[in-house]
Length: 174
Image (cartoon, rainbow, N blue to C red):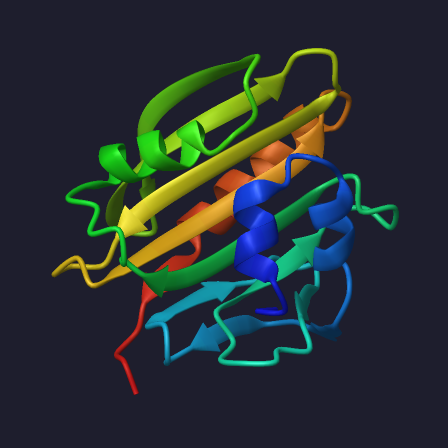
């Protein structure tokens, strides 16, 4: 999943990044990543995808449609920007998006972790991005869950996204 995953995640607002997340090996059950210190249960009826990572695996995706018009991505990364709290992280991620957007910020949970989120709607497009960021206790890692979908799919895909957020757990590092 790390084949330019994080760069494309940060820079792309198109459906291109969604199509990349629909590639890889299917799995079901619980995704566990001890290197990043988290796990997520995959709901029945959905399958996760692991990419062909060129480096360490940081996370996974869940295609919500065969056309990849809806996808959820969850990953962990070093808090290299040294965000002090989830609100600062969300502000930073929102500022990476194209100009001319409408967005709302909110507080939420990623599993049991305090988190901040943002919903971004792009002017002139049907694309919607929603992302939630939480910091691991101690602040060394940042966890991000992202939903990329369209206005027509948003209500249904948002419910699945909330389910994934609830299924997130911190795991010991190994």
